[in-house]
Length: 528
Image 1: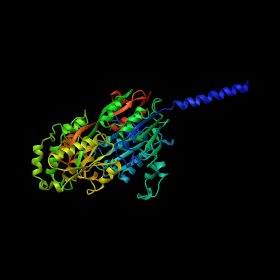
Image 2: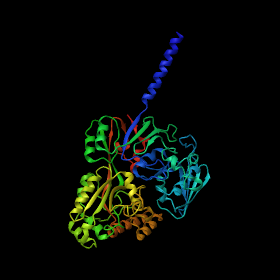
Image 3: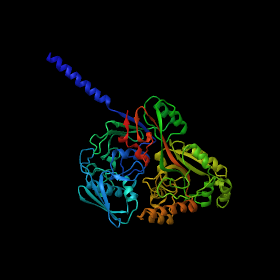
Image 4: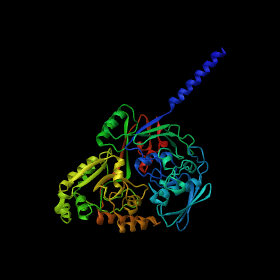
């Protein structure tokens, strides 16, 4: 009888264990490209930060409604009267994924490391943060070299890494005593304190994250236990996987025909959320024939904006580089309109007007990035109307980025979506046009305009918000009216198809986050 009881008890325990395993939930998503690295100090792309917001914490966190700063790792903060000294008071008991406590020393290390590496969003802080000081375990001070108006909101991009873990995994490298600064280790591992840990990562294949049960802010039991994000570009594969219940959330860069097919499936909803992002045709201003302002203006007038917006329905027209709902937008900006007569007039003023056959232009776009191929086909057709030949080249994300390293390898025109990385016009203006942000995916224009550089510098050191907004407006007029370095088509609206019978999320219920990547912080998802 005792033996039977022991057997019965053992069976019940096994059943309970199996039940617990069975209850573990997995959310399966797709992305247009996996990150090239999990290191938050070297990345700045949309997909990179969809992952980073889950693996890492930040001193302050953008609110859902308007992306204004809310307390996070920092419980509070204050700033000196001259706006040069920022003091942050940290929450106690924040732990990294290895169980060690996050302290002010980790914050200092993270800032010093980002500036030292000089990649990703380092340009926010390089030459602006003169020193980071540790007062005690829970107090850290940033001393700025000059006022920096949007400093607080740029901290959304300072992911706090585990100093001890990174230092224990140094390899040989170019950073002196810091070797490779942990870049090799963080290529495929995380050193964060966020709600999820990186449990498996295969570049250009998938990234898998697992819930961190000891997360200091808590993670709901209904949040997914595991998230697997697969790189899927092909429309047929996406439809097949959604139809056969192999994915629960398809990325928001689908072609409209694919999105419409997904929306017709049982229990599939579509979440719409506007981004702080514009679709750009970025024009190389240093390479013939697009180095000529009249040639660029001719292209801008020859672009059929209504046709472009029809390819991306529900997307508002963009008159310049800043979305209309972002702080610092120039309200009375006029922009360009589709006018072939004005296009031909401008082209006639170009020194290349009589040599168009000798100057075809290359137009590059990203493979698998929604309907951007159709945008480029429309662009080529528009250019043909004024005698300009446009040759289209589709490139995978990595090769698209690599081509932007020099003026010579950058094509005449590229197409992509560029986001405001913090909720101000200055974010996208600096990213797209400052001389210190050339050489990456973000600036095919190679603008290098000293007048613009002086304007953006003045704006960013301006603490008064209204005065800063006025300076942002002046820059937009300078760009659109005097330089025409880009063609601005529309403001991006992401449309993500998801299985409403599998999970719910704020974006799917009409409450999207103001910054697009933060919609994919999976601790706010609820599995059904």
